[in-house]
Length: 477
Image (tube, rainbow, N blue to C red; front, top):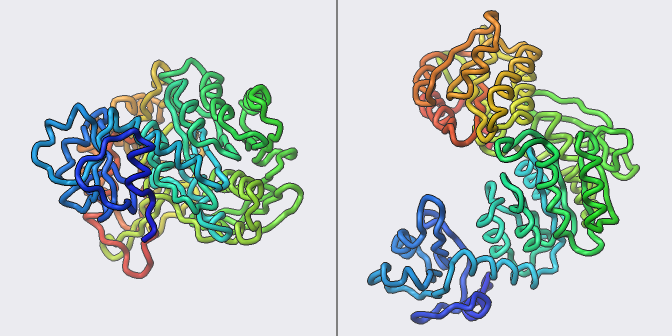
């Protein structure tokens, strides 16, 4: 049996106290009692909303062979009879295991941060590195104070390439995480107006993202967006952090990893990529110029960690949009179908513009309409009214004539749009769900986009529940 960790290793690394007869080892690690697999260890992390200790019995019922719990919670666990490792603090123990995973690994490590595009770039790297070796990358957007150590602790010892996403919405969040990950290559996708409520300006956001440079391994490299207005700031920050190898990507003529030409449609793209002087034609199985630009960063990073570049470029054809980030559904309605573009995972001004461009590039059929279904962009602070109003420009430029809105902040966009645009506004997501399900018609293209806190996934779910996947085409996953 190939163990992710032996129980003896875990207890020693985490300074834990074994209780009961521990299994020889574990096959995986989970913090979710619902999805844990047989033979895995359940770490009972206390989060902001829920405490994992309250779900320990469910984890055991679902197959956990070992649970990691805190000393202070032990009395409350009652009569659970399962092997345990008892620690002072479960999240801190997970962090110790993460550091040990990194220390034992010989993998080439890539870390990604940025205001937009982290998860998609991570998925691109998963694709482009896979033909060259065993890849370990985070599931979903595990990019915070528990997601990063969890992903590290899950990294098998024989991994060839590790890909980590590191996010933040305050200063000093990236610093401790990147020092765990210790990447050989760090990518900053872009700097944009995300989490503006916690920062005074874009330069402060750039400074927080620049914390990633502090954890790069000696001799490692930074990959920066040459097209971004904060490029000069980031380049200087990387230099000050002692990074001698600084590479760039984008459409800029001086970019090391350059998007030389782009030909996109609603489903995919063909690009000409110049990677350190060599130009290749690359087919990407997901639409959008913003996707193509980040593909340059992924290909560049692949080159820097020694991957087979021909196979890396070929692998991008198999890329598909990530759930909630441009995933497309073709749904049967009446005698026809509608196209649903699911961008419901999150939103900020830059990603809103990219999603509007995707909608503009998708042709409705019959008498169908392009419909932008938009919800609040959260964490914009005092800038909120302005950044919501500013979406009127991109919508008008793209020729979007139907805009359906929900959320208190979106009232500002409602007031900014002219009468030529058909606007429907509802204060809450629930009210907008009912309206949308009743109002779509065959041929429509519906793009759903908001910050996660608005719960626009309910709109996507309602459309999927009410209108079946169209039978003559495969749903993309």
